[in-house]
Length: 125
Image (cartoon, rainbow, N blue to C red; front, side):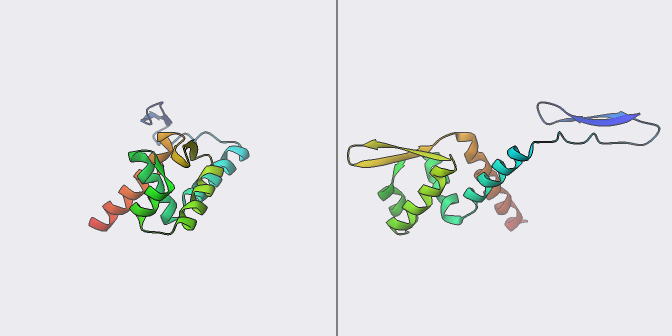
C-alpha cells in the first residue's frame, strides 16, 4: 500500500497500496484564498514591479532612488508602487518630504527571487 503525503518541510512520504503507488491529493484551498493568491501574482507580474521588489529586498528606497536605479520615469515608478501597495506587497512611510518604501514581508520577495532564478537557470541550460 502506498500513498504520498506532504510534510511541513515539503518532503513526500510514500506508502504502498496493492502494488501501485498513489500520491495523496494536495490540500484543497478555498476559492477566496486562491483568488487572493492570483491577485498577488498579478500584482507581481510586471517587469518594473519585479525590479522594484528586488531593489526593496536590498533596502528600503524612496521613489527617486528607484528612478535612478531602474532608469525609468518617476510617474511610472509611482504607478507601479501604487499597484504593489494596493496588493499589500510594499508599504511607505514618510521621512521628511519623501516617502520611503519597503517590503511588507520578505517572504513575498522570495516569489520574485525564485522566479528570476528559475528563468536565469533556464537561460543557462
